[in-house]
Image 1: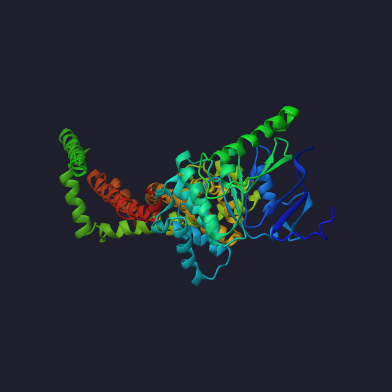
Image 2 (image 1 turned 90 degrees about the horizontal axis):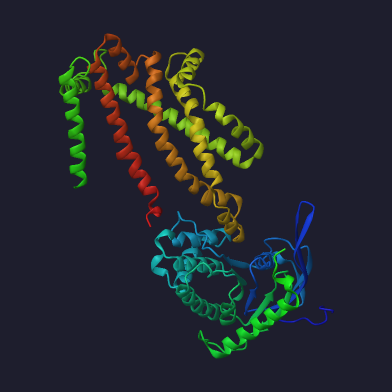
Length: 266
Length: 251
């Protein structure tokens, strides 16, 4: 396939992505020959069972760890992984407990060398976006888990990244809080127009949030890419969403039956 | 029961016990009234060496402060070096238990023979004895740093300088404080022992003098003054500073 001749605007293409780790003399392949596309401005989820390499894939896409092979093209042009300007939201909020909420966001702004005179305005704007502007002087330990995760989202957005990477950001929250945050995340996404790459192992979460879902099996093989065409705003329990999810899960389990080894972590 | 009443009750019980002891043997256990009046006399009119008790307390306090600062400063420097270099870390980890072992008195005597019977000797020997204890706490703190926070900082493109300034050092601060309070409680004692051995001023020197005269009441008067100063520093200075510096902990 010749990518040079078919530049795709607004698309990030990943071709033959490969990553393995060496442990002594043994080599453990997380994934190989991975091919997929991510639409700019879209909401893409990466889904799969625990240990399938979702987080590793996210780290490779974000340039935190280098891939062993493969290439990445943006608008048809070849780019290095570290050339994407991204904000990262982790599974845990990872806030600095000794700094106020406002100062936690300033930490990221300073790291990005945002001019000091712009910092306070941005801090307020993004805290307002996640509904926590009145907590600007509170300390992380004075907030609930859901609020802390919102601060994590505000911090990642405040640097105004091209891509927002989210690594199972709601998996350690209770379901009520998670549901609220998912809905708010969609509002924030629509308001900011960011490209979001979201890692999850929760199929209904993936279906509710995403335009497109990449599904990995236990061997790190990308065997399915599901487009979710259900119009927005979506509501939890929408029949079209439930249908998409069950069709998706059925294909996943059929795939496992064909090759039961695929669930195993190596 | 309110806090004030609880305190009043336990202090009252302590004084009562003291009075009972002195009633049993007033030579071995001088009454609190006698010790109290000696304290006032030593402060206001001065000891028989012509200096006020406050002067001796101040001299001892200065030595304790210098020794504590030296021990803590050394511990922080060594700790950071250990964090930056694996070889340094291994060397100090191997030698720490040895460094913690020599008896205080032996260290004091050797240092005094080396540098003379002066303030430097007190400061150096106390710092030598307590640096390894401070180092254990600091090293623990440097190892307890949450690696996930450093990953977070990396993902936002923070440099080493920012990571040290805003993650390592603030994290370390709570260990420095814990170590400081712990050290303060201990350095006093060894500093006074060092003074007893051969210094002409400071609380230890007066304790030695009155002990050699066989006067228990005067020895007790200095001890009580000394305990009072340590408690004042602990509750009126260190504790409030710690509360303010760690406001973020009160969830």
